Image 1 (cartoon, one colour):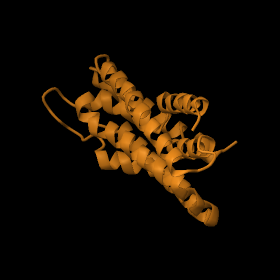
Image 2 (cartoon, rainbow, N blue to C red):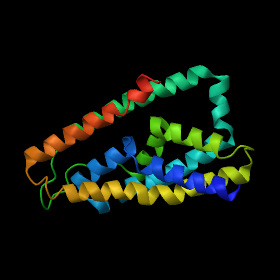
Image 3 (cartoon, helix red, strand yellow):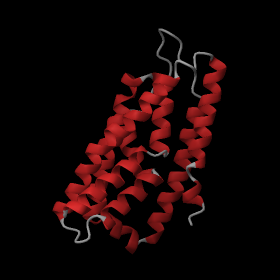
Length: 198
């Protein structure tokens, strides 16, 4: 991998990781509802889960979709229903009272598994492995996965911190309900590219 391609990959990894999407919206909601510390497993699940996903996609998993197009359609349908379910959970999250630990944030394994039904994660993995590994060598695929692993975690942590800081404003239960419903609506809106691709 040349220096120019590596720099372009780092920029792509940063921009695609830091911009709004299902992962970041859920982390912001989790940061606001549960705080940074309780959201750490969720962040690690995204970072490591997506890195593993890039490795598998680069190693040839995308060929399964080429051979069995219905499997891709099934994945899209599962993605839509799961994201709608998560949006409902966010919208109906009970406010955590001081000294209580109501509700549970997403676990490491739930967050890692979520990458496989996250439309943005699929778009990122497919773009990264096709655009930045033109010769599809194992070494290049590992570099792409490592770059995403290093860039992704600090990027998604930013959204958790943002949510945690917003929690100071969301001390009123009514404001927290409005925030949760807004995050749920944005999560549903993130399905637009899946439902109506350009």
